[in-house]
Length: 138
Length: 156
Image (tube, each protein chain N blue to C red):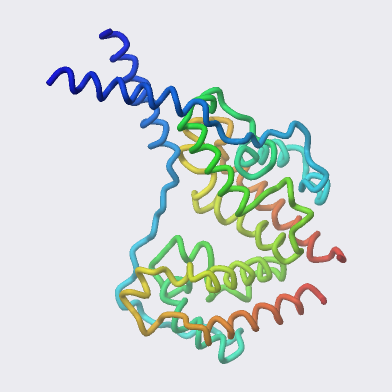
């Protein structure tokens, strides 16, 4: 009987351990507090630039201190990207913004005035649709 | 008091046994489906081998299940990972993606591995073959760029 109990405990413990290891980890890097806004060369249409400046540059530009965000997407270096990379990034930007995954919830909570509303989403969507069709030669 | 514990434990074990009868559907095709990326884009053999080792368990129709997948609720957990993984990227359904999406995914593959987000840490812990070295990462990123160019220049 004791053995049965023991093996039961071991089984459950093993299950828990495996679950713990395979559980997807969500890591959200902390937001910068009042990062300096740096002017980025005007490679984007004015209305797009404004949305990006307001809602994205805090983490996704040279001026940001969020290394991971910058590594994935740095608008200050946009013009250095190949056309293929630009298309890839733009599609990702559009998806993230459309789904409300970016800007992150915690950022918007702290800076409600930098949230992305429907109007901004449309600006991004139009830009991405047009620009990536152009780059893909369609 | 001891009795309560015994009953509790007994019911746990009973529950554990019962859930074994509820196993998720398997995702284990043996051959690359026709729409797989290997038939759609140029994938050099070392890259193909690496992405099969490191990605295909959750990002294709060809999961190589570990032995512990026989045990619920582990099997449920793996099934969920695979479902989620395929929803984001399914190499076996590559030909069904729009060209724009293909480029987006290729870009993301390099980015996510570089950022250490993929493969999942827990997965790598259980599957040492999924470890991606610096050199392999570099090769993968070179390939994703080339493949993106290939998609860019291809016509529908």
